[in-house]
Picture 1 (spheres, one colour):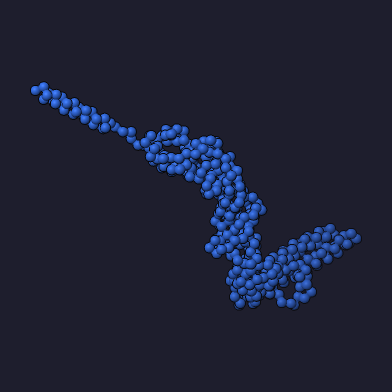
Picture 2: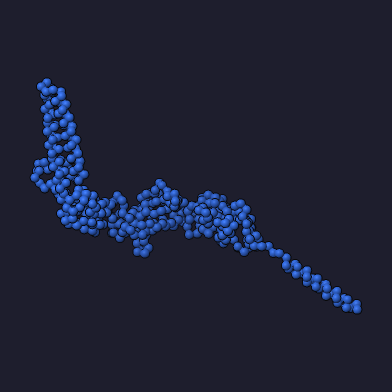
Length: 386
């Protein structure tokens, strides 16, 4: 009997012990999760362990600048010209075709225009009236001095001379706009029977005909475009550079211009750094010129502008993986405790393949999240509802 009671007690003790162990095993574990406290992301210990965030202290670094920006080759605006008809008429001579080289002053097209003849005749008439009025005024001046003519007659002669002078200037200006010099027009007076209807348009500079839009015998209107002419010996590449990097570019700086697909490479020169930034893209236009004597580069081709072998000493730098773009700004996560990370806004500067300069927002020795820091960004956005 006693043995039976002892056995029951042992059995009961065992059951109670097993029950106690079961209760202990079922104790609630710490949940994995994160929360925001102001500008700090708080992690549970388990979440921090699973995230496996690596940290690194900020320090100075030498950053090798190897910057590249995409652009497109174009004609320098000052080296482009549209050759247009100055008066309506009929084309009688076309001297050039697309692709031809031209030199300054070389004839490109000749046009017969009735309006030109009218303008020349108007000039000859104005010239004669002006000379007559000057002579009449000189005669009246002498007569007034001799007290033979009246003051009224002198004033009338003076007024007629002024009117003739204005008419002469207007007629002369119209012909000057058509390319006729005053010296040439004086010769016209000596030989008024020469052909009055013909005028020739000439190349304003050395260049190449890049388009031809005129044919022999065509009736053209005033301002009709006949040719487009460009000097392609030097070309332009425009690039858009972020505000954070624009200070590296200086006027007259040497850069490299490439087209990798065509295995092309040329030396370029920074011709202009715009003083105005685009408020939408936060970029600045930079214009680079390249020599093109061999004609290898062509307007419309894509090109890459590269700036290499430029060292920048950064007082504070972090690995590229530590920097994140969020809500249009740049941030890094600074560890304040093993389970807390403060989101710090920063201003970035130069960068290379590995490091990013921090201009503002961090101090040397700050402990920043590097490897796996993208987890912090994701958790932040989830908690903030972004």
